[in-house]
Image (cartoon, rainbow, N blue to C red; front, side, top):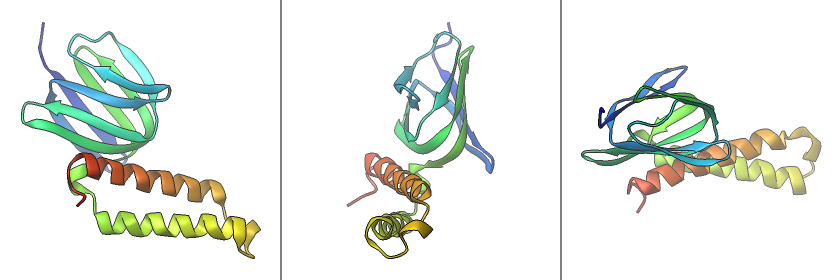
Length: 143
């Protein structure tokens, strides 16, 4: 039996990660799933969360937001709506996005333009920003 998995994380903009890993932990729709070599075939949806890639050189992290995952024959393919390797996350840009989303939500519930703000979109933007910061934190990129 092959002792490594080949993982590929793909978005509409291209391949975020591709390579061999010892194991991977992904945010499934019903909770986190651990995938090791020899895992049974699987097709599942992805939630917003952090993917942990256990590599021989240490753990690597990717922030993902939605999509699907297929596991078949020691290959794991994540077709993500959005994904970003923690090492590529621009912390300042994420913090600005988080502040904008927080301001929109505050205005939606307290401001005069209450009805003009798409709260669902603001909540999703805040969740994505927090997830990206979480991935960066796991990678040791935050102070």
